[in-house]
Length: 112
Image (tube, rainbow, N blue to C red):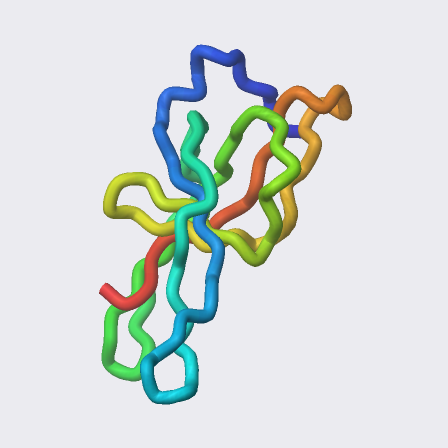
């Protein structure tokens, strides 16, 4: 099991975003990301890899992102920290089963 952080370890200001449909002016819609909330978190790198796919170098890094318990985070959201974007792999895990801290496994990166 992952070690539950202390509150002082949540030092990264992150923004939770949800995908929304916006009118495109032609009767259709386009998908865009909209801010849901901003909160303190701990962004912890777990692993990284690089590979050559179709003659393009791809780099991916897996992270664990810790935060205080929230009821508005799902696997359909993404988390933004500065210019970095993290896609979530799964719903939040109640780390210590005491409803204090949660974490999500997330992936950063794509084509380099």
